[in-house]
Length: 192
Image 1 (cartoon, rainbow, N blue to C red):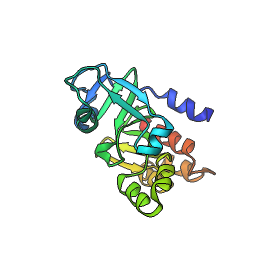
Image 2 (cartoon, rainbow, N blue to C red):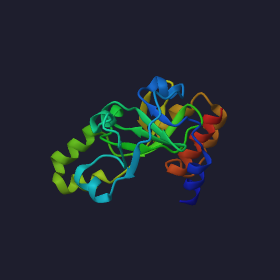
Image 3 (cartoon, helix red, strand yellow):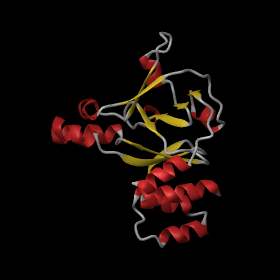
Image 4 (tube, rainbow, N blue to C red):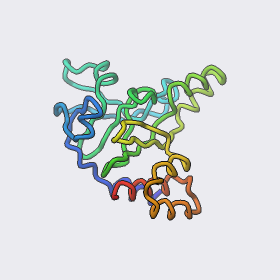
């Protein structure tokens, strides 16, 4: 747990505060505009009942409504914290807090895909769906191509294939499937 915290706090975002409306603005670190939006962590009960991700964002300004925040904003940055809208990536509603961003790969923990959530709800009912809604998966956003994938051992091998020196070290790790190990190697990949 401590190691995870060190990684999270050791990476500052270097993204200017503001609202990013699309991947291109996010890649170039050029927000569309600056707004002081309110961020709140969703409760476990709310996630159990409604699904979705951990952070809700709202505005005190009438001209920025809930639908705009949930559908149009790609990411929101405030005080070096990056909140990625999961809707464009089909990872249900609301926002996930990123683990920092110093390079081409941004990691974050979010709920399962919308398709998987529907499937679980269909086969296991409301209680099963509620329990599954609280589970979080580690994802990586590749800024070059705008693709989000679940971060697994297999994904890491693909990401590291063009970096033989890092790949070799990763392949010799005892616990390659641990989040801490994968986050450390994403950090190394971002430094190259």
